[in-house]
Amino acid sequence: MSRNPRRGSSAVRVVLILLILALIAATALVVWMCVDLVNTSTVQVPTEAPVVTLPVSTRPTEAETEPPETTMPEPEKVIATATIASTGDLLMHKPIISLAAQGDGTYNFDFIFTYLSEYTQSADYALANLETTLAGDSKPYQGNPLFNCPDEIVDACKNAGLDMLLTANNHSFDTGWDGYVRTLEVVQSAGLDTLGTMAEAEDPKYLIKEINGIKIGMLCYTYETSNGGGNTPSLNGIPMTGATYDNINCYNPNNVEPMYQEVEQYLAEMEAAGVEATVLYIHWGPQEYALTANALHVKMSQRLCDLGIDVIVGGHPHVVQPMDLLTSTTDPEHKTVVLYSMGNAVSNQRKGKLSQITTAHTEDGVLFSITFCKYSDGRVYLDSVELMPTWVNLVSGDGYYILPLDDSTRESWKEKYHLSDSLYQQAVDSYDRTMALVGEGLEECQTWLAQEAQDREAYYLDLAMNPDKYAAEATEVTEATETTQATETAA
Image 1: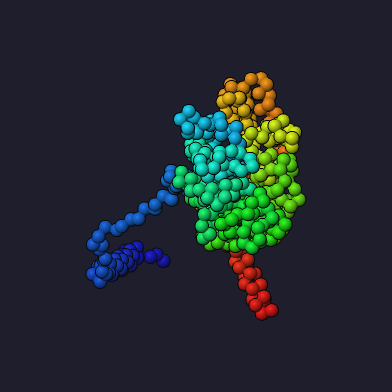
Image 2: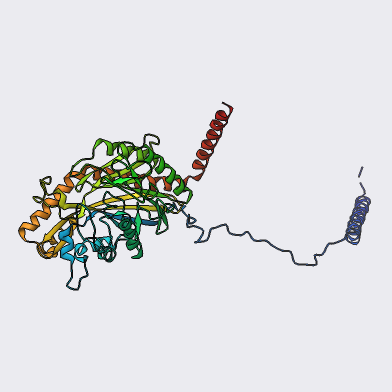
């Protein structure tokens, strides 16, 4: 038995045709779906070009790499200084007056200050003690015991750069009330200040002097002898007839308490008037020629320190006496510089001329300079003290010359002052005598002031750097004070 080949081939063709038709249909379906998708979708077309933000570099510029400039706070600083130069007694003996006499009947005392004027003129304010009266030619011109000098001594003082003459001393009333008053008139009419004596009872008992913007209060006192009773003082045993205690600042060595009460009152008045520093000049008494201060003078200085005086300058012994640095017993923060005696500025008291003068100390004196400083916060401090020895060189038939013994110029003394070898040695001896008396006290005062200045600068710097610390301290002090006051009030 055998199969038919044509019949099998037809069936295959039919299957192929069906597969082709199926593929065509599937393709058509796919095409239709794509067209429909295009027609129904909304394409968003941007109207503006997109903004592209590029990253900014954070690299610092060259200026920013440097550290920022730091302004340091500026501490308080010194804005003013005031230097007062003081010298001792102008003890106008007759031989000095005679050498000043001119052929026309006038007098010229300029020779006294020939060499000193360089220093007094350079000070902001300079002064000396006028140990004489100026009663005019109605009284004889003479020295001890009743001093009276020609008016021209005041001209010489002014020419030398002096600004004030102390007029309270034991010889102030040597020519009576008229000479007393005339002395003030002559000095003041020359443009110089006076201190210690007053023509009118209501005149100020102290002087407030503004020097380079610093207000300095100054007082001058002298000792009195046994008073004449009642309200009449006595000087050198001479009752001051016509005067009262309102005409002179004086104290009784046997009863000093009234002086302390006056000084306390005057200090309060000066403080109310804006005084920022104080200096008291005092003509101690009655002892002369002693090379050390006596117990009373030391006690008085301590009491004046306790009252708040900044500097005490003494006179009358006619010799230089030591310096000292006192601490207040009522305020340990307050100290007082004391020079117990400046000695003679000029005199005829020379070794061998008087029985009580056995050394040459009466030929010695000083130029004592004190400097106050004011800071930008308004506070005033004693800044420095300097002392230069002086010596009176008597040139026979020529004059009495005050020689400033400036140690920095020692090599030129002979040439500058026209000194022989012998006179040069006398000048050296004078310097050594004075420094032996004042050297230790001067060094103590200068060391303390230097330390004070250093501490002051450190404080002001710390205050500028740490103001909050001091503000807190001030608050604590205020609160403590208020608490104490409240407690005292309650009590």
